[in-house]
Image (cartoon, rainbow, N blue to C red):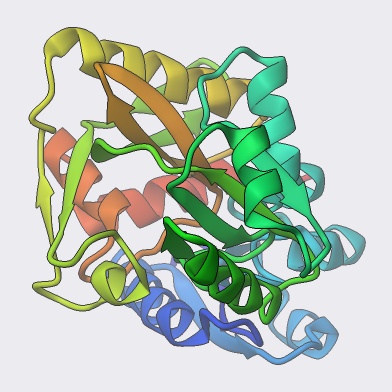
Length: 308
């Protein structure tokens, strides 16, 4: 056996079902690679399973709240267990769309113009005056997998979009709608061994890449490599690398973009990308020459390097 890996999945967020699929796929891959694996459906407490199993490393496959926001990372730090993925602070920053937006600006990374609000009564006219666009995207500030997102282009839709987003979060990002090709750049590794994987173009069956499109087989098409000019591909790779290193991300991440007029605009950062049959980072890894099992083992080995 190569080592003891605790695969943490499930959790309490809106993305629980996807996390279960990701976690079970990861666990099976690691078993095939002769790791001693224990699967754990996280429900808020983790101390007992750590004490009993004594893992060498934890593979975090939790999506959304408690998984990508730094919570489980903080618990594992206190318990002295190395874990896959980004640290407490980097996870919290990446999960919060407002903090991410501020850092995109700080590092001169192109992103859509936006407005942040905690007021359900924010007016459409005010939003238009800030964003300079009638068509907008309304998002909960701290949800993933396109949960609670609306695309709007009039006042009635704006009010409905705010209500939807506020049902998931205390704060809302309202941003300019950018029409263009959606692409994603996956990155793996650390320090001097960071690899930018082939870029994927995403073509959803519906108007945009929502939760249903992300996780339902046949509801989106992944084109690898993306059908974009070479110079746009190079720029997107450089911007993704800049995000990865500027945010001090670790092990693996996925950065989503929209391309308009040959300029990639960053949409968001995913520090724990999905690892399901329809997920993007396994597709990108396969295009690079890494099987799913190769990818999961690579991530574990990177995390094990931090074991004291």
